[in-house]
Length: 558
Image (cartoon, rainbow, N blue to C red):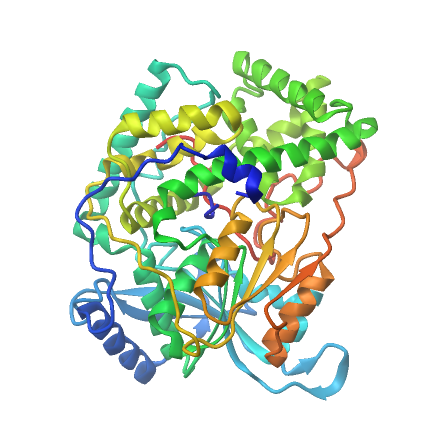
């Protein structure tokens, strides 16, 4: 699913009666206590503790500034065979500064390493330590070594690939909300070819790229860092394998922040979660349209959400007939507006690009939605890891008729994202590697230290119900909710109330008794036409510190 993913009862009602029990191959063992995988993880952690990580200058391939130090940690490819093939995961670190940002004379005691994962599957955390330069992170960066890493398969960490990034397929420009039978057949053929490509390029190793192994890798990284107990922050998908870690290694947890939580219920992983996500984005898309309508004087897209929708559909139709610059069609338009469903700070830029296009200027839209060839290899790698992990993690329906029935029904109520989400995940219907049975995330009272769950009430990428379910399953967990907001990844974002709870927990170990609520952060300010190209490269720039919270790769079709 795209970084996971539904908000509230309304979204749940959209899905009533739509889901069918996924079918799949023989489930693999999740690795319960006493299993070969559990023993292998213990062996690997013991070796890592003895070896440690030799940090030094980051390789040029990482494109990281000199302020970061890099190293590697070795983990088994297959934890059932710890003496078998091993792979290396890349790690980055900035040491705790020990400096109080509010009092230069005050020394801050070091509290160890804070390990971060931004989600995905398929996202790298190698840039994370740079975030310590931002004002809202300086107190945490004073007390903790900030540690990022690339999970297995990502970047230079035993990278996965499902097709040759040097020969990418021709971009798919069309994205019909009511696909024809011929369009569906073409997408099915592409999904089958993509699944075959994953199997051909990775061979027998493909089956070992799973969320459970990501959790085990995290424990080996903990040991390699010399940490007796782990302090971890995971955003989006990072909350899922973080919760697996809490289930498998509860005594190894010191503090854990789970930001924008995936619903960990086994029956949700991952087919039903994608149905949930498609419904959720319809709600968030309505929020965005309502904002554009409130600022009609700036954008001229309509004074009501329905009028804005008609403006958007007008642009879709025009792009379907004649792609902007020959490279931005309805698929690229939908992709860039989907990103705005994750982060409302994208809203001004996207609204302005749409407005300019409808007024005859396609340049802003081409700039925000057009292809970036320089990122093709990284995107292909992210897509491959995303697909491998989610397809391996759980059974999926193997009969196209199940996908077609469920999503045809859903698309009548939630057309914005439904079919594009199908094409993203359809390779899992034709996956050749064994499927696992998802682990039942659950901890007994007193076994796990109190954890902090952060959630925005209207987050589409990881629906609020997932945070509630995660709190129910992790004994002693505390849930902090940003009410009425929908940004994805809220830790140390624009909400000072949320940030206060985060700092109190990480720096002092203080938490509310059971739950707390924060008022929503301010809506974005509409962007004037004379600054329409600001940030046009998309996601908070390239190479700059990013706010935690990562989106699932947006692949139009395999």
